[in-house]
Image 1 (cartoon, rainbow, N blue to C red):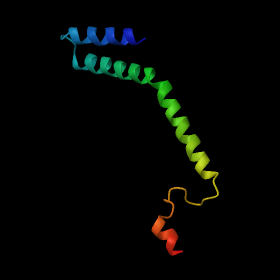
Image 2 (cartoon, one colour):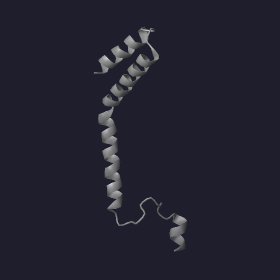
Image 3 (tube, helix red, strand yellow):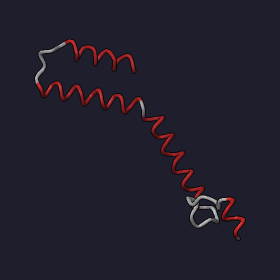
Length: 77
């Protein structure tokens, strides 16, 4: 599929007699094609992020974003 996208991009670039509407159409086609090629990595990143958030929500710590106490703070307690 990547080869077809590159061929379309090259064909579009070689034809300077396109109207602005045709140019916009082909640009949209190329953007949609790129998004389709990247759908698997994007979904993986989204699912990994959701899993990480879920694991943080399941922890006993009410605010897992806070840094642990520094050594200085631990010694003062």
